[in-house]
Length: 330
Image (cartoon, rainbow, N blue to C red; front, top):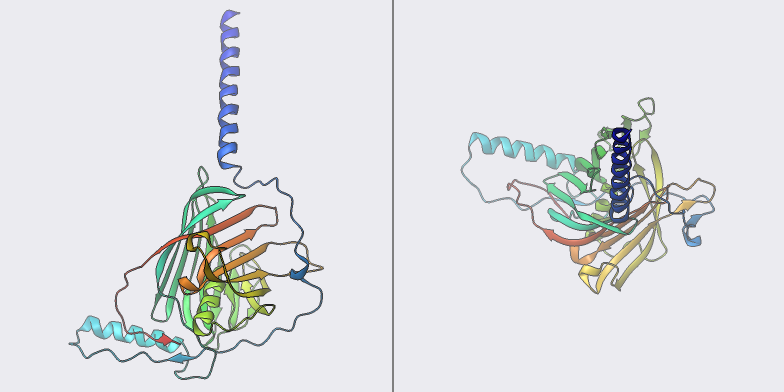
C-alpha cells in the first residue's frame, strides 16, 4: 500500500512540475500556432467596395552597364562571361522603353521579430542580387518549434523581379513550394505542391509574398515619386496554393519614426486592401525605408487566426559577391 501511495505521489509531483514548466513556457514564449486574439475590424479606407481596374503590367527600363576594362581571358573567365550574357538577356531588350527600375544592393538585413507582441530571436533576410538573378531568403527563429523559413529565387525579366520558385517551411513541417513556369514573354503557368490539380495561368509581373516588397523597392529606387498618397497598386501575388490580385494602398512618403532604429526617417507605408464580400484572409502592412534603398524596414502580417507576425529593422550588413559582368537597372 505504501509503495502504491509513493508511486501516486511521485506521479502527481511530476504532473505538477510539467504543468508549471508548460505555464512558464506559455508565459514567456506563447503558443506557437494558437492565438487567442480576436480578429480586428479592417480599417474602412482599406475595404474595396467596387471593382478596381488593374493596369496592365509595365515593362522596366534597362540600360547596359559600362564595359569592364579588358583583362586576360581564361577558360573560366569565358564561361563566366557567357553565363553573364545569358542573364542579361533575361532582363529584356536594352534601352527598351519602360518605368525606371533599380535593384537594391545585396545585403543581410537583421530584424527584431515578434509574434503577438512577444519578442523572439533576431530574424534575418538575405537579399542577393547578382547580375540578372536574385535570391531572397527569410529566417524567423521560434523557440522550441523551429524557424519559419521562406525562400524566393528567380531572375529579372522585362517586367522586373520574376520569381521562379517560392518555398516555405514552418518548424519541422514538410516544406511547401510554388513553382513559376514562365514563358519568354513573362507569363506562364503556376504549379503548387499543396494543390497539384490547380495550375492557373500567370501574367507578367506576378510576385510571391516576399518578392513583391523588393519589386516595390526597385520601382521606388527608379522613381521615388510613384504611388502618391491614396493611390492603389495592384500586384498578382502567389502564396502557398493561391493566386490572387493583391491591392496595396499607398500612404505616400512621410517623415516619421515608424521604424524606431532609424529614428526620424523618410518611409513609405503600403497596406493590403480587403474586398468587402471576401472572408478575412490576412492584413499586410509594409514600411519601406529610403535610407535602406527602400528595402523593408518593417513588415507586419495579421493572419486569419488573429496571430500577428512582425519584423522590425535592426541593422544591415553587406554581402560579398564574386564580381561578374552585369546589367545596371535605372
